[in-house]
Image (cartoon, rainbow, N blue to C red):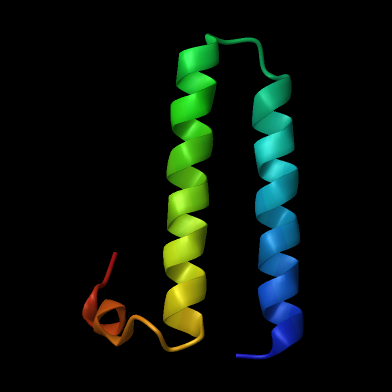
Length: 60
């Protein structure tokens, strides 16, 4: 996967998290949502760089 694609995905996720934080809702819900998105992004990055090969078999 090209490095430009990885950088674009990270930027898009960052902008989406910023937009979610602008929405008025409870702080705990925002924190949980941010945590879930960051964990998913880290898992995706580990899979892209080949550290977690078993995730290639997971289909969503």
